[in-house]
Length: 111
Length: 114
Image (cartoon, rainbow over all chains, first blue to last red):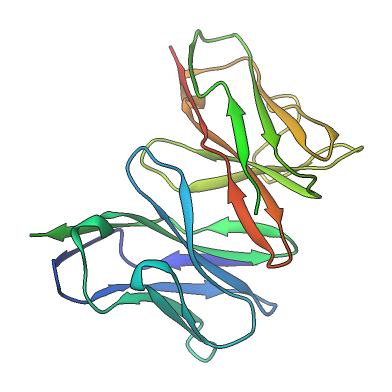
């Protein structure tokens, strides 16, 4: 079975400090992996995606993620958090043209 | 890319009634999906809307409760039948478009069942 686990339901950081949002996947196949962000009362926005090319993927707004097959992980990072990064983040695994969402991580950024 | 619109954007319905949600895409797409996002929860895939054939439902979702139509490559509807308060959710349409295999989401339909 294919699944994705987001290890933290809530993460709180101070503005200007690094962000780490953790995601582990389980897949019998070579997965495609994505990170989406959802701001309050807004739609889903694609941050970045991994589709078997470079393992370090750079996305929008300074976010990046590294695909580590040995650890079955696809953690999302950002060197310096901004207040506007406060939102909910979803890790998504895709196989056979279907997309399955993790439970989400709410990121809080303190001034 | 793909631009997706949904109607209605929100509705408040009485239990026992049905609501049909429309999804319109600005380009022809092969893959179209319907998701549900219950309050405070992640997104759950309901079904894949197949053009010209019956939708393919995920475990826990059935056609009698969530009938789906897909008459062409730019349009689909999802009906939430015989609603109960547990159906209160945001329902989202999504498509895969472009050569980069990207998934695009509609703005969602916020449904409240009283």
